[in-house]
Length: 320
Image (cartoon, rainbow, N blue to C red):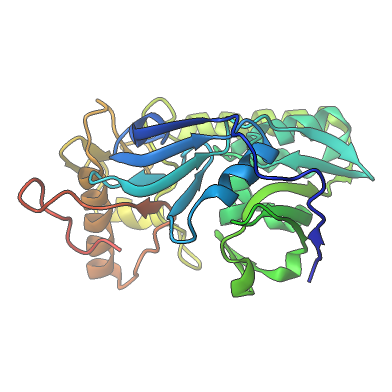
């Protein structure tokens, strides 16, 4: 296990970030729907984040959010603190033959940085609609590549403000999955990573990025609020194929609709959907696919927070 980083020049002091109360999370998630967070903190930098985390009570629920591209906050809101990582100044540089990048940096920037510097293998990150921190947390991937295949080590911050460097074997990673092997590091947040990509041709890498982006634009409803792929692909199949085979393209509840362009996307075309609408569509798609194919689709997007009282809105059945 990697050793903790000595907390040099770290002492709790005055916070420099911004704290907001009852902040609508629809402003910070790509679905543009959902409830409010009791508190939202935007750290000024990593040191400010460390000070902030050390000031929280041990029982305070905390959710770290990047670009909000795979997150839904239920309409009753999140009764805890959301930390917005993508607003933190993010650094990216070469270090000992590796690319060091902080968690708040958007993943596509890493793809372009690598290509500009004659490296190949990072191109898939151009198709990840989130930050490096989010890509690490869910082992994001596309076009046959995954984030953790290129990780050499990561830097994390614990709730007491201490920083640590961790190695890949300290995490259980798989398809759209990353979990610490030890409960002791379960509440640590990724704040940076070192990636290794192989030497290559800048022009080839740029062309591959262009091709990936063209394919995304052609196949995904990027012009409408969405959260990317809603379900993981089951072994040997595709969630989109199963959903489309059930005749569910265009199916809607309230303001939420299964995309006509890509069946594994749920869109909020008029920005009128509630979180309950979206969750109900998710539950319906799972139920129909299970009934027809006997396959239980596993949700890729994360759902947090509380339902509104049942007198206000019915809870979607079968949500998980």
